Length: 128
Image 1 (cartoon, one colour):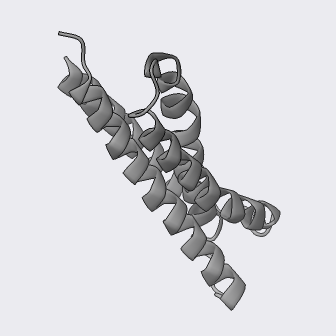
Image 2: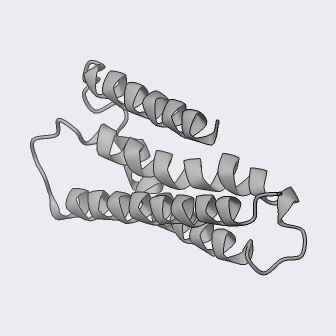
C-alpha cells in the first residue's frame, strides 16, 4: 500500500511539473517573485532537514510529521521549482539570476534530503 501511495505521489508531481513547463511565457510579469523565492528556498530546505533530524530525538514525533510532510518539504521544493520556472526561458542570464538559480537548486536538494530522512524515519518507526 505504501508503494502505491509513493508511486501516486511521484506521478502527481511529474504531471504537475510537466504541465507547468508547458504553460506559455508571461514575459516579465513574474520576475519580481524570483529573488524572494530564491532566498526562501534554501532556508526552507535547511529548516526541513533540521526538522527531519529532530524527529528522531523528540518523544512524540507523530504530531510533528504532518507539519514536516505537508508544510516544510513542499515549501522548500516548491519555492525552488518556482524560481527555476520563472527563469525557464529567460535569455539574459546575469550573475544575479545564476545565483538565484543556484539557491533554488540548493533548496530543492535540501528539501529532497529532508524528504528522504523523513520517509526513512517513518519506515523505521512504523507500528508493528
